Amino acid sequence: MDLLHRGRAHVLALFRIVIGFLFAVHGAATLFGVFGGAYGKAPAFAEWPGWWAAVIQLVGGVLVLIGLGTRVAALICSGSMAYAYFVVHQQVSLLPNQNGGEVPALFCWSFLLVVFLGPGKWAVDEIIGRTRHTDAPERESVTT
Image (cartoon, rainbow, N blue to C red):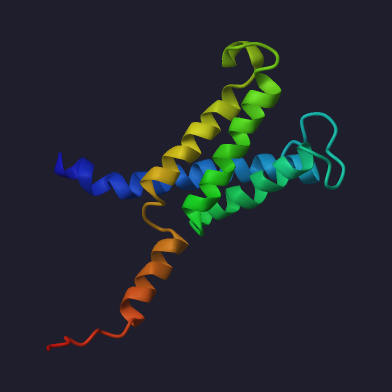
């Protein structure tokens, strides 16, 4: 049991890195036609919602991948996938296996998990937090 507890932060970090990478690749494919290209026609600049969704995917995915502003970025990514599921996919039918919404649903819940569990190890947030704690001046004990 101790081994599972010790490895938790590392496995969470790997989960965060993989989810962020997959999301960023999806955004890059949609915006720039790379990595297999967009599914269909790439959205025009600032076109709602496709272009904005792809920007969130690319930027949010990279932020989650490197662990910078992780919880906020993951919350925005999760919300964008909830929007995609309920506005786009659920219009087709109720269940994800019927409406093609399995990927948005999985991304939505995966990012929500990162929001609540944090970035794990190897995150820029962790490095910044460590630096803040070591650079902070020690408070003197005030006696009255």
